[in-house]
Length: 202
Image (tube, rainbow, N blue to C red; front, side):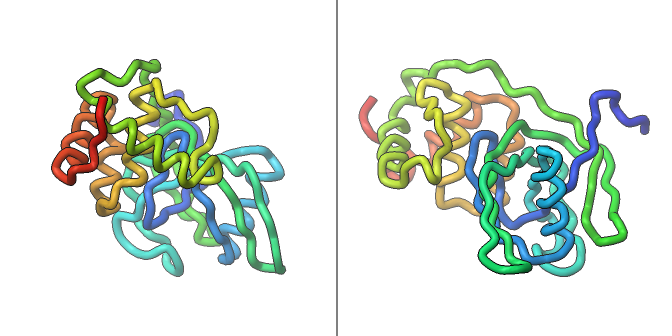
């Protein structure tokens, strides 16, 4: 299979969590391969990819990631002691893995194809019952957990933010990330919220 011409190579960080576009993900790094990766990313102002783990664990032997993940860009960092790095990342666009490679230091890299995001579209009136809950969560946690701008008028942004805070298994979160249709994602979330009596008024 030939590699698509728009594919790019990035480091891959398999995690037990899902990063959504526009989401905030703080990470604590202590393994040499990821400390080196973060240092390179910060030095060259380049991103890495976050993928949910399909097989394996976060520490130790390289884990097998799901084939669709999200670009992560480092926006802040702190090193309180040697060998321990805290970084704050924000999710960029989604991508699909075309080919994975294992480097000598056990860091995974991959050729990935970026996936275009849909144009902003308003939240349909029938699905606006989810907005009061999201507004309350944002007000409670603030911009540390929700990167600005807060696009409550964009159905894609609203769907991603709700998907990352719902108390659901990581695999269910991954399935929501993989959906290409914004309204389908929001309808699934709306149905979940209705079942759990979490919807507000329109």
